[in-house]
Amino acid sequence: MSLGAEDLYRLAWRWVPRLRARVGYGAFHLGADVAWAVQRLSGFAGNARTGGVPQLRGNLARLLPEGTSRGDLEAATRAGMRSYMRYFYEVFALRGLSPTQVDARVRAVLDPRLQADLERGSIVVALPHMGNWDLVGAWASRVLAPVLTVAEKLEPQDLFEQFVAFRQGLGMRIIGQARGQKVFDELVSAVGEGRYVVALLADRDLSSSGIEVELAGEVAHVAAGPAAIAHRLDLPLYVATVSYERLHGERRRRAGGAWGVELVLTKVERPQVPLVAESGEATSTRARDRQVVAAWTRAWAAALEPGLTRHAVDWHMLQAVFDADLDQERLARSRAREAASQASQTVGGTGRVDEEES
Image 1: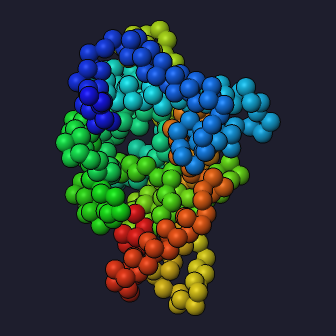
Image 2 (image 1 turned 60 degrees about the horizontal axis):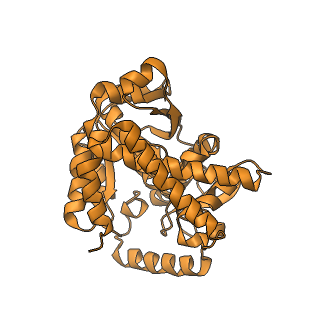
Image 3 (image 1 turned 120 degrees about the horizontal axis):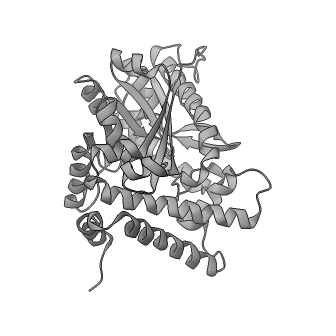
């Protein structure tokens, strides 16, 4: 009898927390090394557009300094796979950590304006797929404010419910999102019910609402959601980087493991945007909203870039994100279909950034 991915997840939820940290890290690092080695020994076979190790290598090649040797790129790819699998081990083991262990594993470098912003209410964080964002979410929910975030609904349903229960057990509030579903209004409503750190993974969006940005000198598309929420509700916007670091001495003893993360939270001020009429459209509030959201998104992407390039191996992006790696004709057709579908459902004249931006 073969095991499907959902069966492996169920086994991991049950058995991984029982492993000693050294054994758990070792096993998952070995799995990363095997995946990297198999792909490498196959003669670098595989199209980067299929994702996985080839795409990770391609993404790293764009982030690492110009002139990086092939050997250094391979070392970075292997380290990137280890970082990626380390995250999965830690997620399955996270429920077994005490608050003291969580605190010891997170070293936070916080913008000095953060505390005052949290005293006034919620904040929004644009989050990349870096390091262990679930560990950071557990820490933030206890130390800063409860984390409110969106999770894609998985199949089967019971597996998704396990993930939701896991994150809720860490103090987070989760809004489920089915593929293609818009949850902007639900997020807006939820933020109005309390004080939250609204953390949204936003470093890849190939839909028609994705915002074109520049990362490491390359064109990419990221999600409009963080800037749209911040603009709609007049909330501060931050960008985060999360990178792994080796632990030593007393911190390692308190953490109960060899790895921790550095969380850097940087505030991104709302840009002043001169209004430019769009395709004959009147200088409406709606047009200005779109332009502010686009400019604010580009601003947080620019603020993300230094940390992303400095800790490139901790960016768990095994999918195509840079436009140069995408099938442009297929992407254009997909975006056209989505835009036509949204146009048929849109109620005009609302004067606001609505769910098409989330």
